[in-house]
Length: 85
Image (cartoon, rainbow, N blue to C red):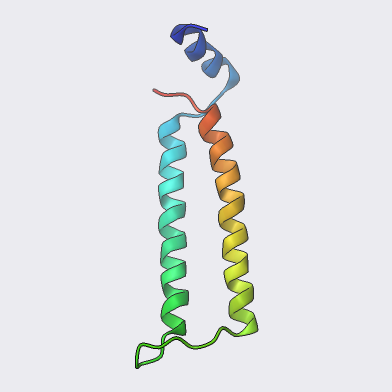
């Protein structure tokens, strides 16, 4: 398919702009990094060693991991379907 044909197909399909998908990905990444930094900071003792994880912290880490995996799946699908401006 020609480039023009691909552009037309994307426009007809209602695909969102790739720049919007990338902006959302950057915002999500920043949010996750901030959250992980806070969680890691909560585990550090004043001497720099790490506290053992509590059950609640393990659950929170698992939740973040699941959230990231789900986002990656959605992001990859949307990135494959987006249109360049």
